Length: 130
Image (cartoon, rainbow, N blue to C red; front, top):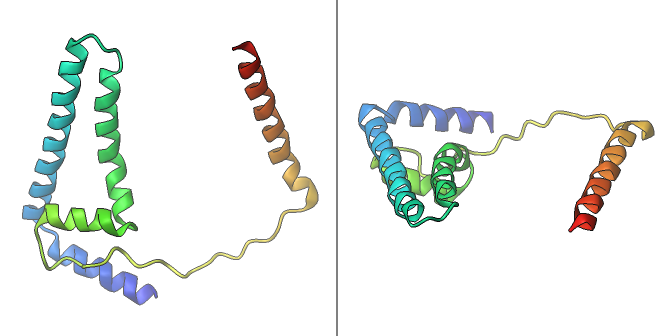
């Protein structure tokens, strides 16, 4: 399976050039301007959540590269944005390398249980006040 990942990576890097980088950069800028164009009129109208819209648009740009590595619809959108038919048609194949992990001793779970109880206590206090 590692050979498939190497083949996929080699095909992507050999077909990704300046043209694709420029197209992706333009798409990112258009996406940011759309977010700005939506959030400015809402902010002028007096709504306080207008900046949140822009933050959502910005966060989608930051998350998009990580999502395209595994999710096929996002990867196909990336291929359409880049406009290069020579890019791999499927997202990066999964790795089958698994790291063996020893189970924790019984007392190793106490920290998780303790923090879960603290979270539940804080949630109870918050809900009790309202």
